[in-house]
Image (cartoon, rainbow, N blue to C red; front, side, top):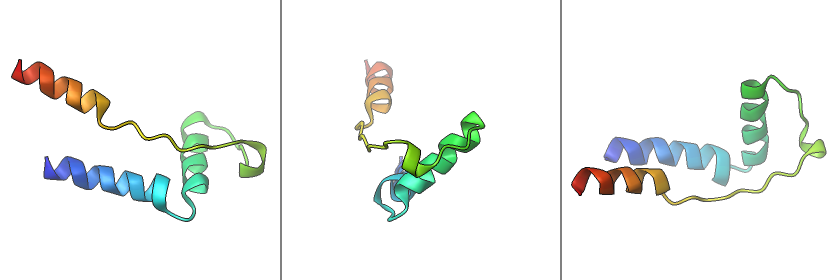
Length: 63
C-alpha cells in the first residue's frame, strides 16, 4: 500500500500541486491524444476523486 501512496503523491504533485500543473496536464493530454492544444485555448479545472476504484476493489476482496 505504501508504494501506491508514493505513486499517487507523485501524480498529485505533478498534476495538481505544482505551479505548472495545468501545463503538465495539458502536455500529458497532448502526448496521449496526439494534439497540440495550448493553455490559452482550453479551460482546465482540477477534480479530486478519492480512491473510488481502489476502495471498491478493496471492498470486493474483503467481502
